[in-house]
Image 1: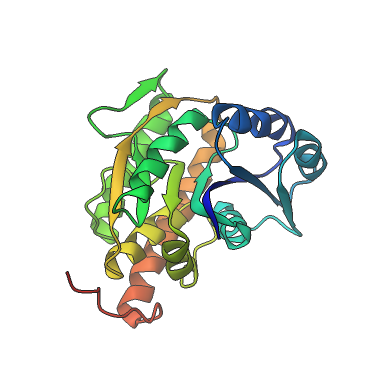
Image 2: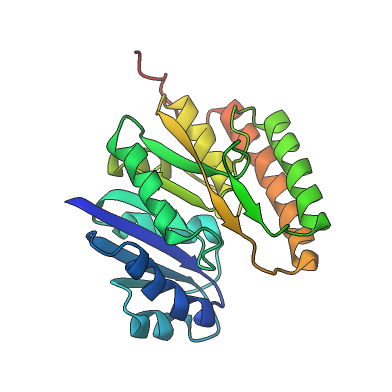
Length: 243
């Protein structure tokens, strides 16, 4: 572990154009800090890996086949060498300077720091579209029903960990897809880790609503799997630490 280093993991799939802009933007926004940028190419068929290297990423990891965002983040964090481990979306829907808010929480008492789009101080501009807004609302409520948790926003694509917290959580995590965020927060609570939330400013990026629908169906199935594995003791969790 390198003290004060911020390791930023960018999971990427078919994202050559986005990676070309994201890597230098992260480095520029965090200028003056010791930053390690790790791009994980989740089995892309385009030039994501090549472009990431040309853009100046410190590490580029390529998965042989598309496994899902959860798998990509997990691989990136395993290779990270920083004192603060952060992942964010490669489309930079959250300006990279906001990573410093995550780091500030981790430098305090937090084991995990998560952005929350539903924090009273958060700002979204412009709207994501009614299908995604409604879908997000429904998914959030189903999440709280199937996998109870106190968090208003589990899916924000900006989260950070101490190395020890990342080791504990991702050593047990099983979900490879987009519902991995719910699983990691579930595991954090069961392990008694301290999770802190911070407001974010979200810049929406145009995405296909058609693609969103099958993703949502898979995410709901993964929620059921998390609940089932927890009931069956598949996570082999110890009781939360006292205090």
